Amino acid sequence: LANRHRLVVNDARFGMICPHRVAYLVANGFLDSVSEIVIYDCHVHRSILASLALLPNIESLRLASHASDDEEGILEELEFMVTDVGKIHGLKHLDVEFDCVVHGSRLSFLRNLRCLRHLRLRGFDLSDGISLMGGLLNLTSLHLCHGNFYSSPSNDVNEKDLIYMMGLTNLKEVHLEGVDGLTEIGLKPFTTTPASVKRLVLKHCQDLNEECLPSIGRMEHLTSLHIVHSAYDEVPIFDAESLQCLNALVALKSLSLFYVLDDPSDLRDLWGLASLETLNIALEDELDREDVDYLCQAVLPMFDSLRRLRIFSEDCMSYSHRSGNLEVEYAPFTFGDIVYLE
View 1: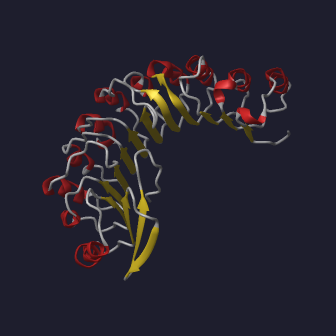
View 2: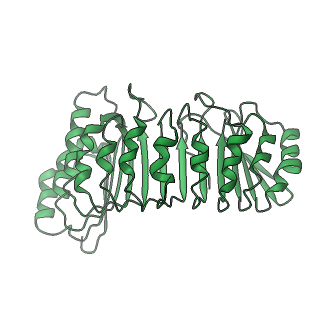
View 3: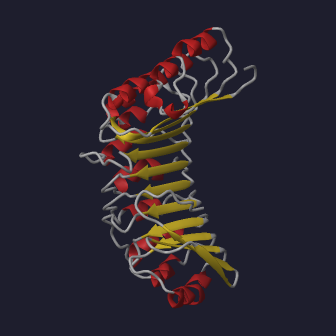
């Protein structure tokens, strides 16, 4: 085990690991070189994590549980498990993904993780608990999902809680998912100087207020902006005045606009995006080949740097073709899908 840096605890299908043996390895220094831990089916490995949390050099931790809260005792195991995470004071990278939903008040352990640089949380009820992240001053990457694909908490996120993040001035990447009714108030920590966010993702944020766009337009360091909805989300259609607020993003290289355009010709309102290289769009009315040809020949030439157009829809097959110097890709997308957008 000498000089091993990554430890993976596989899911329960491969058999249970003896907690006493793991505790022995930890107590006798055999795992001291480990800096990265990944635990699958973590709800059955609570005692394993309790021992591993004592290791001296842990910098990265990923916890994954794909059990539903219909299974007896699962939720309680996860609630107790996350408290052990707070004992790993040197943690820099934390990724937690649960298929059931843990109440946000259980995030109190974050107060002990002052070294965190990357935080991803999926499977928490963030109507509570966001204020507990305000002290994570070293964060450069933040990914928050309210609930998960399987369960949406009954209470919405209170966007005013996001104000507790005003001090997180080192953030470069922000991903908010399932934060409904978002306005410029919730975006203020990420749009106000000295914030210098370079990548912003708003995914399945229903009822997104158009007044967010002027705030986003002030994020002068943005190189990636992805506003991603599904056909089933309640979303506004951005008017010309709102879209034109994005023209100040002269460094923007990749842009996603899903179900917020009334017509492909609305892209003409984004005349200021001179650095744009990748454009991802999804529209309520699917585009046929004639529509795409018109888009490529009459609208997109205004983007001098554009090299890739991706068109997403629910039913299309994945394929691609070239239109001059532009690569045109077609890809399926439905609610909850993970898509590559850069």
